Image (cartoon, rainbow, N blue to C red; front, side, top):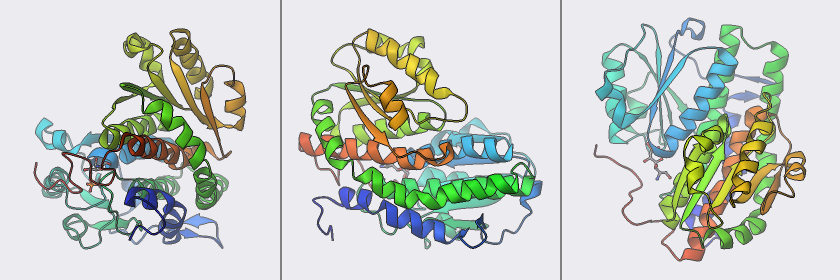
Length: 366
Ligand code: M6R
């Protein structure tokens, strides 16, 4: 049942501290402070390339995975939505890993892509939530998300547990490739181990985000901006909002604003900005993109850490101060406020949150 919650989606958002912890427990060794994947039938040190294929929210998890794997393991990653993958006749590399991400393990396009890669001799790794699914059965290795059953059509806890698994995969690959120092591996593992506790802190912003939703619910169009892994969270936030509130939303890389979308900005457009501090000072670049937006009347809702919120206090209409964390794990935590914002906006709009129109939980036709 839904417990104390009005909708499965709310229940599933609030389960995230627990299920992220359950997912991590299978791969994190607290005594050694290290990450261990299940036994693989190949040597990770030899992997020349990773190809990621998925749909919808699972694809956005894959996009975060690409940034993580390339940064930590220096292995090239190609990523496609499953419906495009086979038909462009992708060039696969011998000995490559093909990684499929799916909550259901039954999505038709993703499964077809898996079978294609298997026939081409790729190593098949899947990140699935349903251990009995077709994708799980047909893979060489299954990296399980322990999200438990997800009922709401809008994916929430499946996404953050997929990110948890992908983070572990990136760390394990980095160790195998010798691109991660033992000290950095320990620091990343420790940062991951902190995520369940930090996620609970993020959920405490629920009421503040419900207030912000009153403003978003009035909008016809909403923009989501971010850079780096936050770009993927911007895309995911926009998908969540359109699925359940039926408000038109777009996610953009913040640096792309002046290449077109800034033309849309006026006082009626909420601009949701996902901007944790990061290793590359992308924060400052995002901050200046935000100033340009505000100069054109954009109404900014800012998700950052305390330092970032302080910096933008005169600029943003609303801001939420997120916990201070290692930038590596930020996307797992910043997924939560965009889920809550979509949820509360949809509730205000009176839509069928758990079963939005025209959508099915599992898309089993191409
Ligand atoms: O079961 P899968 O993860 O393969 O599903 C992929 C998409 O259909 C799914 O993520 C969809 O986009 C959700 N409705 C997003 O909330």
